[in-house]
Length: 416
Image (cartoon, rainbow, N blue to C red; front, side):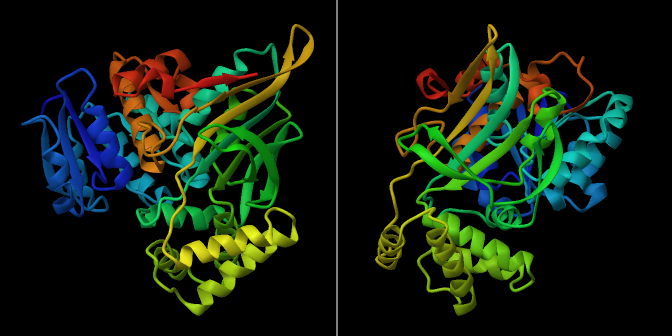
């Protein structure tokens, strides 16, 4: 099979569809194999791609023989199917067996650590494994490296994300991930070493772009605090702060996440309730009990006001959504010329008129497409397992974002 072929697994996923379409805008004549267990969903996408570029086929990624046949001879395999705690291992191991490069936008700590632990095997196989190449992790790591380059020493790194109101278009894998990080263990970096916190409990604030301004965020179980210390081992604190807009969504996520963690709901039940909520359906009484418990907790802790909660519930009852606001930010503190200093990089724009931060699928898929461009530009000299900060140079990444269609003014701004 041709080496000018890129394989997408889980191609029908919302984020992966964006990655495919925007990668196709870049230079090159790559043949695209779009594989998914639901290939019929891909038909509208293929009509938007250059004629003859894409081939669609059905694939169950857990069918080892079929998986190996699909990826054989590919220049790059992109895994867009989540949740990665279930999907990463079979595809990574198949790529190592077949000797083909691999890239994903994995946002789960457990599967990220497992994949990066295969560094020696990847070197022996002579291929790269590019892990966490989406928005957060992914572009967020690049922003952190860019900000840190301003400083002589690095003391603290805050990697921050906000996702806006995307009702009703949110996939189940995204909701499963939200339940996974809404409670439970949060491996982070504090006091100069790895420590375990409770996810979605510690808070912080950051001056987010995209119309958000100073925003209250929650420490979340994400890969960045696990991978970035390898580059900045002397840092005292590295954490990932995330949040949802409008603010009451944070209480809902915490309430349901805690119910799942405590065994009071299954993940399936919690995700089903969230799907009902996002699609303006009533939802179960059990779901509402835990969601309201999380929102009341926000009020008691002073994280949000009762008026804000009441307005949110009234708006939701009337099936109204909020204008989309979201963004990525990296804030690094340390010293410059012997004096305390702070460097910030963030995405400046969000909403329906934006290209990059139009929604979560857009920022993740576009970032993935840019990482793909960088990976395919490599001349086959890179082998091993890599997090974004290990290999993606910020200026080159920003240029790659432009190559996949992103206006330069939307990519990054520096905040003083």
